[in-house]
Image (cartoon, rainbow over all chains, first blue to last red; front, side):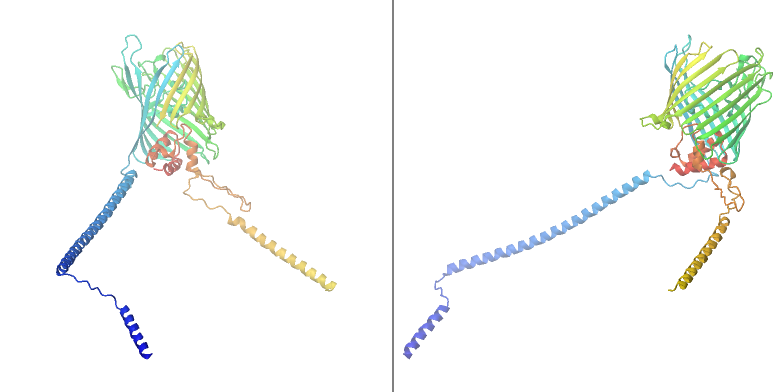
Amino acid sequence: MKTRRLMFGLVAAAGAVGMGFPPQAVAEVSDADFNALKATVQQLGEQVQSLRQTNILDQQTHEQDVQQLKELQEKLAATQQTAQDAEQKSAVAAQAQAQPLPRGPIDEATVNHNFMILGDAEVQYVNADKQNGAFVLADFAPIFLYRGGDNVLFEAGFDFGIQNNGGAPGGSSGYSTTINLSFAQLDYVMNDYMTLCAGDLLLPLGTYTERGAGWLNKIPDDPLGVDLVPGSGVGAELRGAVPLGDSGKLLNYAVYGVDGPGSVDGTGSAGQLDVGGNVGLWSDGSTTANLHGSPVGGARLAVFLPFPYKPHYDLELGVSGQSGQWDNAGQHLYTAGVLDASLHFGPNFETKGEYILTRYGSDDLGQIRQEGWWVQASYKLAGLNLELPGINDLELVGRYDSLRDGMGTTTDRYTLGYIYYITNALLFEGDYEFVNSNDPTQPATQLILQMSYGF
Amino acid sequence: MTKSKQIKKLVQTAFAAVAVSLLCDGLASTVRSAEPKAAAPQKSDSAVSPTNSVESKADAPDAGKVVVKRQITGAELYSIHCNRCHPERYPTERTAAQWKTVMLHMQVRANIPGNQAKLILQYLQDNSGR
């Protein structure tokens, strides 16, 4: 039994050991196969080496590419920055160009000049009774201002117009340009209340000549009667305003001496009075001399009464006059007097007018008495507060004027008109006039349209 | 509390109330009497032009009436003078230097005193924007 157990154990152990060892291959390899295998392994090894080298090269190339890419990106960033800088500089330059350049301070005492052109321009269309309608006026009236200091001003006004050459039998064709010097004066402001003016002065006979002509007139034509008095004269004037107490009341004054009216042919005939002929020397062929022995004197006194602290409410009343010789012989006087008044009652209503009276002696007709008057009222429809388009820019105006020329002609005229304010300085005016006159050359009615611009 | 004590207390309270009211009234009177002195008009500056202002009238010191001194402004003078003859021209239409020349022309033409013209000019220049 023991032996059997021993034998059985040995066999089992051998079996276990045998199972623990892997089965061994017993196949045999020939030399040729071995060498072939060896060659193949060597070949594979060389290929691996080659691939490894290629990989190294690729790696290096990749690194170079990455480096280049990095450099290109840096360059791109730099270029973009440059473009942004250029854009900013361009924007700054454009902005600087739009803004006014800073200027150094001006020494008003030494570098002291300021030149300006103001004035107005008109174009007029007239359709009168028994006449064809036509554009009858193209007028340009600049005013040149030159300020030579705080207290010195030179001002001159011109009137450029055109008129046809022809019309009458034998007349020439085309048109002529007329140039008239309306005024040219030097103003020296002596103090707050007194100004010395000298030159070809706008005369303060009434207020129309100084403050109502051109685009300032709400009706396209001048009132009757204003031509009875001279509008300008060559001479000198003291003028100014003195406050009367408080709240803006003023006393206006003007005193002047000018050459005065003259005679067309030098005689004292009534029809030869020339209220505008008052400049310098005149020769009658044998004598060159002053027109008159002494200058003609005139003055205006007026009060300006604004309602206390109430703008657009004011009253102005004035009286003015002029007297002096008019004929070359100095035998006859010409005397003119004007009463003027102006009322503003609120921002929308205005009325004003003048009464003009002149008297002058003559060789043939003795004393000639002339008179004229005009009264005008206007109302801006903005005062009605109507919600209608364009209504707030419309102003209605009416005028009654009259003239007695002292030699038998009387004229009364009634005018209804409007002003449309395209802007505060560009006006479209129109009026219809009814004329009652014993002068056969006057049309019974006429329509006038005018575009005027004040600059 | 006995009735006598109640009455006594009532009297003391009333006396205290009267004393306090008298004190307050006295203080108020003192304050009112001091007011006219504090509101007395200032002496006017000699540099201020009398033409552009409303002068304050001197009332009796004890009248208590105060008149306000008022200056006409450049804007008001502009409204008074600058559309009497022509439509209003806006300050922005011209430069400050141009207004100086224009105002010299208008001072002569419209007979405006120099000091008022200066106020109008200042208003125009301040509002010209250029």
